[in-house]
Length: 483
Picture 1: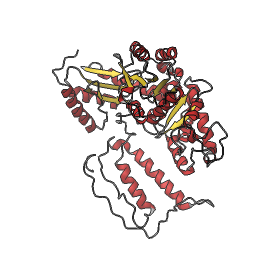
Picture 2: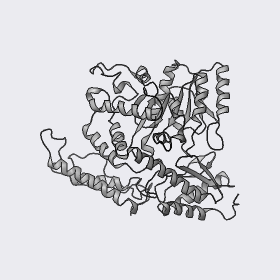
Picture 3: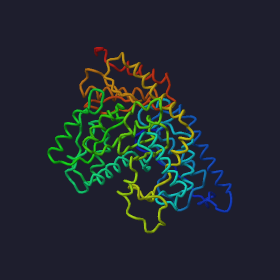
Picture 4: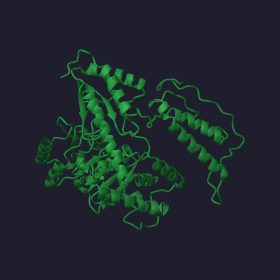
């Protein structure tokens, strides 16, 4: 066994330099290369074996060894390359393990993994159509389908982005341009007090002061208080301060709360304010006819962030920024690409967002959704909610503050403990859980440390949930009152 994660790195293994690499440096355009085929087959086998024995390893790696970082004078042979890869794999976080319940990082969808390989092999660039002719059209079409499915209308569309933080940033940049507030340093953005930290980051990147972010209090369910939002907006408008946007959240990070989207939308429409919905966690529930009511009102958004990577298992990264009027993207970001042939659509992909060069991340989303089908999507979503409900039922008799929403996240902390006592409890209990190969995260929420379970892992079953409840039960001080 290696040293615990976080310990000093063990010495890297040393390799004899290869006389000449037998692996071709580049694919052969004139015929099938047997050596390359064998290498890719060996690589796939190595990955499948890593998956296949995941349950025998902890979700959090114990090994802390890295291969040499700098390239040698001579290149390495294929077997040595795979040995070095194995070292990195052995030290990787293990999302396939049934006890992996800490974060919004589920096991990868298998078709999405295959599409990721093809994406890398095609090496197309969504900067411009001539660099990715089929894939550019596929991205536009899939974004349009997703946007319509989520209720934004038959003219809606969007663009893929490398993560929800970038999608949220682009949304607010577009909102500022549409509201004609470029250069307005006193423009305000209103959002839930539990909104994702990427909103504050976005405003910092946009050059706005800290005072631009106006948090709105949440209620006991973690949802934005609509009456408070209306009052704060009216006060800002009366004071002559322009409002850049309101950001509602469909799935907060700690408890999965969903702001009252339809009521927030009514307030924004009445005041002609841009509404962005950060649905990085929860918007995928709108794809299912069985669960769309959980995120009722998504379709009222002017812009919407969706992250299929967080629950559906689309390999990272997979985020979309969807807009009711997608031509706002090009009107905001297009600068012209004089070194490219003209676009056959409204604009090249590189003119529809902040990113120029982009991999074809849409390929893994498209193939993954095709593998699931609508029935499979519904099954993944239903399973995640059912696991949260099962764990919640196991923990409800205990003297815990349970923080949850309608989705698949559940955070909890003992009642009647001070902040310092809750921090100590969370540290000790997380350690005991890891000893049982059960991994939960430890967020700081409303001034106290919690443990949080994210129940999107389809391999997590009743045995793991009962084991979590057993460890938590044993961790609670006997002196705690039940109520």
